[in-house]
Image (tube, helix red, strand yellow):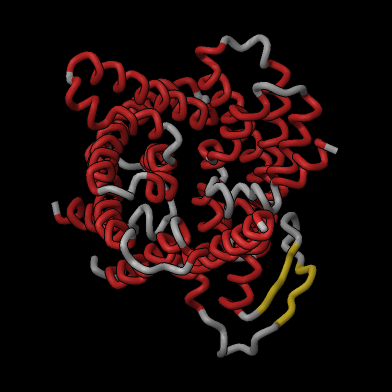
Length: 212
Length: 191
């Protein structure tokens, strides 16, 4: 029961992006399309799960004083592997995400979970925590990208990152009526602010109900 | 000289690291409550970026390239940054307690500031020569400082304004950031 609660916390109550304000940089930068949001989400889940598992396995061996450098090396190695895989198998995703693949290293979510969770818990729980938090992050990216892509380009689409084959592409707003502001940096900040405020409003309401 | 100047302006105003490239948002939201702390953080960031850039640039061309292990770049650079930050903290603590008091608490935070890592990676990706590298690594944190200071002054005013409950804190700060990004987009095409 507790595990399920931990797992679910990452989505709404402790949403890493809109609730805890972790990993904001990449959220703002790469959510212009659904494709890159999903690509980034999957990369982060992969790095997060493996770093949690490895750090959890090594937690009794790593001396306490040098744990942060050890975590950094583990995470940086995993990110290098992910970057090479994306570069080799999905050039389009590689160019869409750009330097933000490398910047997964300094994504606070990964370091934060290593320090707060994986360093104290067993391998299975750490893996589960990695998946939960990673899905929470991906969920936030997808929410942002849906709003920005629909308002910014008027269409929503998804294509296979390996072959660039279009899976679906639906025009929702007729062309000429899209708000291109949402494609650039201003739209990113505004969308983020509104989603964060929505989550805060939901939490406020819940805590008020709990008081009564 | 003209080329260096236009590079400087482009890095500070047009491709501003916070508003146009979305990097360093965490310290941007975290320490912009007070003008003093924003200033301290910016100074620490300038110092660390210039230092870490010179070191990582040297290590890349003198160690990684001759050995043919460029793929170790990311791991090396993040370690260089972490070491440099730790080292700076120790030196400042020993020789300048006054400066340590001003910068002390911000220094450890800088390791996870994505601006530092991005600048060191940019220096290599853009194949800068040594002078360009220096200018770029100085200009980017200057842009960070400019935005952070502007933002801190606005935020001090926000404290006393009437804001809807849900927007209090970070959401309203991001709305302000959006308006600042809109303003800064007017600089596009300056050089």
